[in-house]
Image 1 (cartoon, rainbow, N blue to C red):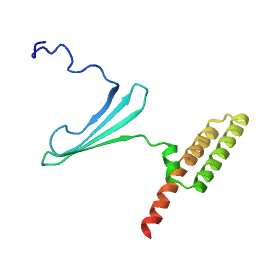
Image 2 (image 1 turned 135 degrees about the vertical axis):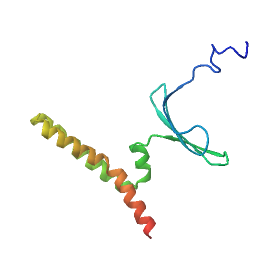
Image 3 (image 1 turned 30 degrees about the vertical axis):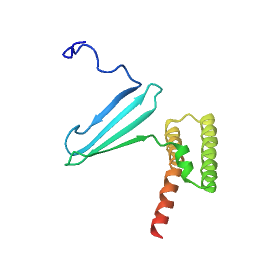
Image 4 (image 1 turned 120 degrees about the vertical axis):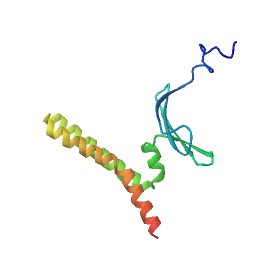
Length: 132
């Protein structure tokens, strides 16, 4: 193949699709790249470049409840699951009785607040450990 021929890609199609590419690709600074796999999983590359041309590359993935549960002790996990079960039961009861938009909006806020409990518990526990 002629090296000046640009009609063919250098590499075959891969398994990732570029979603975002923010920041400079050269010079000092951080470049933030978001990629998604064919199965829909998101990954994040952070390329941190300094003035000397050195790079640190970090590969991150999404954090979900399972990741947060791994940071919690058994009592915290049980408390969260109990609160979430209660919120789900309450929401099902409200939905069965009332289809009012304002009630539904309030209900969704409550469910979102319950879902935030693991992160708040982990954050609180880390603050306690750091203050010791």
